[in-house]
Length: 268
Image (tube, rainbow, N blue to C red; front, side, top):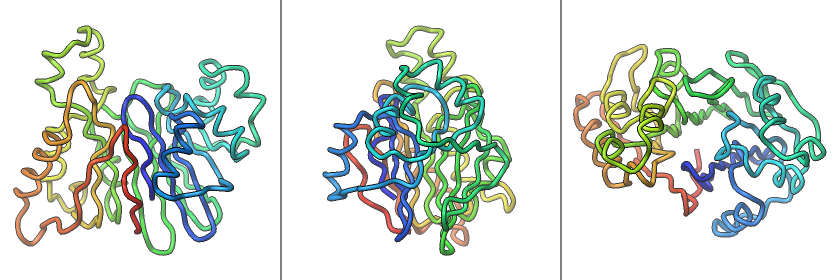
């Protein structure tokens, strides 16, 4: 897994097996996406699918260019597809190379990768997050949600790699430059996860919905550049993980995904 970009200015993640390549979201344009791949010494000649979580620009703004570049089929919910036709330029429809309709709560497969889409609380028409299973490994990518319902926590369990939003520090947000209406949106139940909310989840050892600490990689993602900073998010997560009892300790690697620099490729 290669997180090429994560944040409010663009999101792009590449998942690969020996046979299959999947792009999750398309929030960067062609030039920047190729530059990020080159930084990781990756040369991608084809994609098997592009998955879109929701219609916000930082997740789909580069989609027409990605479709033109790789001519891959698009996997998206019907309601999100309808919204994409409204918010993206006309070139989007002309560049589609097949559309596969997906639904929250339903599993589907792309070659040997089994994928589960599940609903997340966010201010989009039909937002989803994903888990991916292949060859006995599981990756979960879960960003853009205002809180963590129990069903989301259940989907994240047993992950070998967990990518989880840690968007903002509430006090930074409250005194920051955003209009109050935007602050209310981010803080609301359909907004974004705070460092504190993520910390409470990471400290939770409940056997059915808590963080099971089995991940080899725990990646904090979608950090706000205005209302958070990597050190604050990292310290909050580390403090929460230290609250776990020894028998449920997290022994994996805690990482921060960046808006501007691709994260090292993670082998799961």
